[in-house]
Image (cartoon, rainbow, N blue to C red; front, top):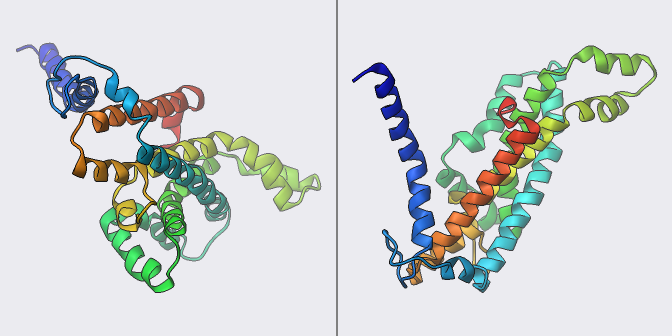
Length: 259
């Protein structure tokens, strides 16, 4: 086999490995049968339409959207000043701080979820919604710090210094000079945090409770009782949503420059 054919064969295998599961899920959701199966038993859109009528999915989708949007905003509110301080000032133990901030994505999610349940939720008795919000904010914070840091590192310091020399305060220079120039990185961090939070499972699984679930956890619970193709249809819709968000971010923001 020629090197060219070998390269094409390897590429085909890689694409099959990456795209194959999505194709199976999409086709399984199109099944006309009453049970989850592949190949599908006929073709029908009934399960794609049914997911919009399941009340538990509607409630958990709203919870996931709330956590993804406001958890990401809270993480950015903490992460932007942290990234600025770590890049612009000589912070004692800066590398240790970076490591600690990165801990939620280094430590396995199951350990993080169990730790939060045992040492935060149970001792304090806080509500499930607040616990999920704090957990998702902590999980997104490392992405916010890293992505925004990449933008700040590429911003020349003399631009900010010029604003200060012209009479602007440090905060004013940050607000009028730094933020407008790193908005692409901030938006990229928001999108990455949103997708990460929305698709988060291990931590949410430990912290969910009666009547309060994120959509991925609710899908797992649904499959314990029902084994119809609606979960496959919903999974396909969520995959399309995630791909569309990342594609739009790459097209309009140059997403790959920040991650």
